[in-house]
Image (tube, rainbow, N blue to C red):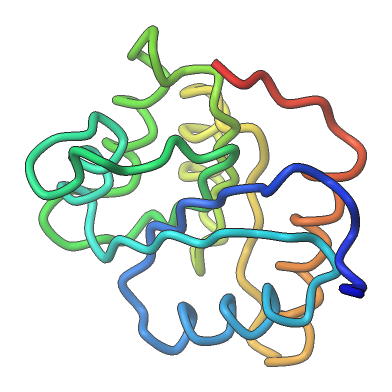
Amino acid sequence: MSDKVSVKRARILLVEDSEADVRLTKEAIKESKIDIGLDVVNDGVAATDFLRKSGKYKDAARPDIIILDLNLPRKDGREVLADIKNDPDLKRIPVVVMTSSKSEEDIIKCYDNYANCYITKPLDLGKFIEVVQAIEGFWFTIVEIPKK
């Protein structure tokens, strides 16, 4: 018998260009008691295509939450956030901005564009895993998320 929490399978879209951060996030999810499916895209254009089920992502599953880095190639995470929150089909998907930026300007701009929360990535590996697990626990065991 699995020790995973008995919830409907949850899905996260991780928009992250750092392979090290992707590996750490996967490690944290592997240790989670929540049954989570993780999809990863490495740039802002791919994130938009994934969410709009465009091109090679035509069969992509709708994520329950999005973890979004700001400093992305091809299309900046700030632009991706604005696109998500201005799209009637996507705007209710919670977006957790998780980035290395501590800039007050970035924080304000993200909240102005309706980010659901803003987290500065911890530099300590153990803390990074704790943060990812806290995100999972909060969004998938405490909060009610709309399915559409």
